Length: 343
Image 1 (cartoon, rainbow, N blue to C red):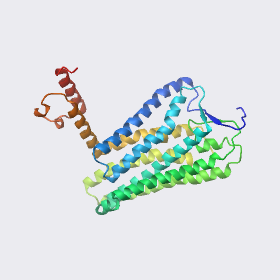
Image 2: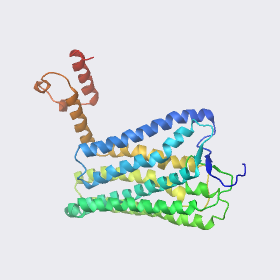
Image 3: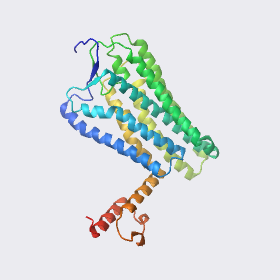
Image 4: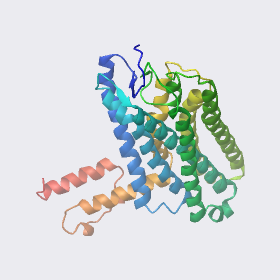
């Protein structure tokens, strides 16, 4: 690698070095990012239109979907564009902004997941006091606290690397700027900085992961006192939360809870918490949550009813509830509009 004085930018090696693989990856990751945007926007729209924001769990779920969109948008668009580029470059300022964004939104997501676990604990273990403990004002303050905590965490990460001297080489073996790959390029001794990074990011990820596992274990044990229907509903909700926690925290612990050592596999591991988890969150929460699915059905039903341009449709001897699947509804809508001469 070429020696450069006073580095003003960096070059990403990217996920792959094979051009054909990059072309295939362009299609795959473009699809993934589209799913992230649409899936999380649908969740947010469903919660808002379904009047679910007044419920603490959906209040926090709405925030989680927004954070997922922001978190993936810090890295995914740049990575997708770089799959087309010969030189995958980024300025020093842009690199620092990316470090800030990854840790700001990533840290905020961690704290929101902790809050969501606490919300489920109160709902299941202290149901009579739930609305008193998790009132709207307190939920708003807690949510503000997650964003402030994420901000301070990210500021610490940026402060650790922004003052370092970089004199070359300037090639980062990754597809986005993160603290550990950047530390490998510094011209000064980074032992203390690396130790602080491990203490900060490692403690947050591992500590939060252990806390969440203990919290959900307590919740699952307490379900023995619930009725069969209560257990089924609680397991459905908590099951979704546990799945998200494992998928998100597993790769994070692997990446940040180690000394100043980087592996070639780190790039693929990072894909899980920057792209795969934000993409799976909407699927997990909708497939495992009957209330969200019902709200989406009602929203879809209202949209279809409003779009039917058939005279006196309200006089027909059936309703949307008589259809068993959405495909039957869509077939009916098409046939009605065809008969009406609209198509």
